[in-house]
Amino acid sequence: MRSLRLIALLAIPAQLASAQQVPASTGSSLTLDDAIMTAQRNNPLFQNVKNQLRSSNAQLRTAYGALLPSSNANFRTGYQQGGQQYFQGVALPGSSDNYNSSYSIGLNYQIAPSIAFVPKAARASRDASEADVTSSAEQLRSQVAAQYITALQSEALAAVLDTLVQSAAGQLDLVNAKMALGAATIVDVRAAEVTVGTAQVQALTTHNKAQVDKLTLFQLMGVPGDLNAKLTTQFPIAQPNFSLDSLLTLARRVNPDLAAKKLREVSSDMNVKVARSQYLPSLFLSTGYGAQAFGYTSTDLLAAQAQSSAASGFKNCMTNDSLRVGAGLKALPCGTGALSPEQIDAIRASNQPFKFQKAPYSLSASISLPIFNNFQREANIEQSKVLRDNAANDVRARNLQVNTDVTQTYLTLVTALKTIELQTQVTAKAAEDLAAQQERYKVGAATFLDVTTARASYEKAQIDRVNSIYDYHKAFAALENAVGRPLR
Image 1 (tube, rainbow, N blue to C red):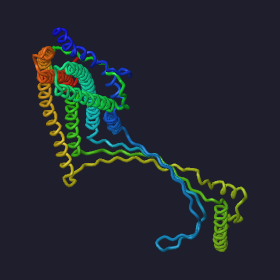
Image 2 (cartoon, helix red, strand yellow; image 1 turned 45 degrees about the vertical axis):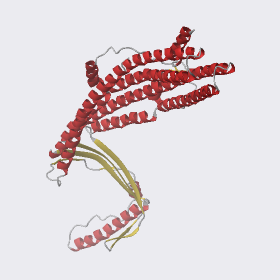
Image 3 (cartoon, helix red, strand yellow; image 1 turned 30 degrees about the horizontal axis):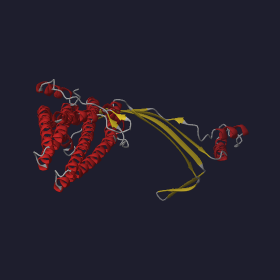
Image 4 (cartoon, rainbow, N blue to C red; image 1 turned 180 degrees about the vertical axis):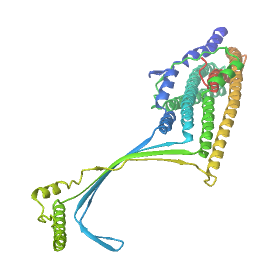
């Protein structure tokens, strides 16, 4: 009888190992890979990091666009009402209503020394942004994996505490039976009732924590929580098949955050060269094409002006002609002093307010040599150097941090694996001691206090064993995060 009870007690951890992977719920299944993919699609903070890449791509296009000439075009049209106008207090002759229009197309090109470095700096910055996205994706994967394991741990602990509630209830039934036979006291009964109540409270609290941990997991995934979802991914417990040296070498090569900082250093170094190019001259080229148009709103004004000019010319001609004739010279051909209808029509037809006349072509070139700008260039260069040196220090600091993180998490993983072995042995011994004390209590060779003490030790051993299993899984996830990539 004693051996059968011991076997049953030792079977609880085995049942737990399977129950922890498939919770007793009716919701849809959720694997760790599904959780990670969902998080990468929906996590708001990760989406913000990805959006920064769009800005880097736009800056890269701008940097390459600086290699091309810039162009601009404009069109202007206006209407001027006729009437008396004044310029610096002087009255100008009155004019008629008129339209004036113009358009131009310009082409400008600047050849500055910085264009040799700006595209390279922008490309390095874009590559660093891509590495930031990769680093953020790996960080998010690690966070989701850690929370997934935490949720599984809470469910496993809740399952253990449920079995302990059933065991405590069975113990209470045994005490009540002995009380009915006069072999136990009311103190034993009350102690057993307290044990049942305490186990129920612990189980209730742990079930609530399991739900909260699952909600936190869905929050990381960026989607509404599903409390009925089954966490189905299984995590094996095995001796690591990699060495610390191989992990350190791998981390230095693939850690995305370290790679991003190295690219930031490259970008900062290129920015120093861009700042130094401010000492060199720049060449500016400019050309353009344009046209203008002018005309009156009424065609009668031009005809009247032409008629008045013709009459005035005829009058002057006649005056000169009389003088010439009086002097015995040949008469001048002064005409009639009036315009023909054909001439008037031609003058009216020449009034075309929107007929553009080409402006003269222009081409200009200039060279600008900066000499002194109140030490602004020196300040820019020094600031760029500071950013470059800080980026180099960040790379060095991240290298040291990678070495520390990988070494620490590897040692923690090895310790966690040994802890599982020890906790398994402790749990087996605690189960054996509890079974022995229960058998002794049945025959009156032990008190209920002995049983309670053995039971408390067994409960602690069970909980510690579950925690040691998930501490191992968390340590493995932390090691993957330190290295920068999955290891299984």
